[in-house]
Length: 130
Image (cartoon, rainbow, N blue to C red; front, side, top):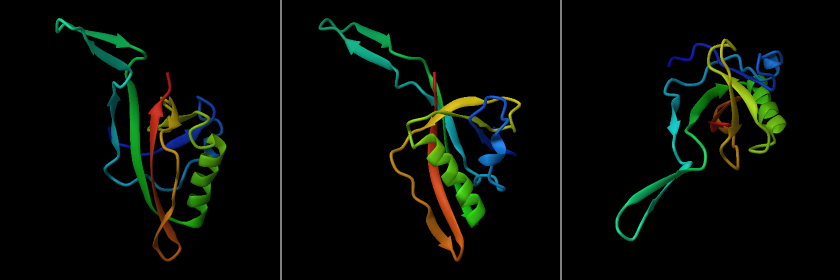
């Protein structure tokens, strides 16, 4: 999955995405995949294995934005603040809202790292909400 544009929104159609869309794409090397942690495996005394599905598979996305200027840093900080960290979900779209996924941040802290004079970098993970 190549990401040519990226959008964040509180509306599934992306109507308010301008508030949260950085002017640059994430670094090459976005990690995405499927998480099956909602499936619990139990083994009986006789050796038989049973599974319980608490919830289905969920997609996740890990991305890094590097060399953000103060404007783009402010946009991502606004998203983090609006989502209140892990508390509120929001819509993420890798294709400028032709499709969108309801996600939530999957970390407790966020840090912008200074990588050059006036430029910062941040890495975060989002997980699909069911």
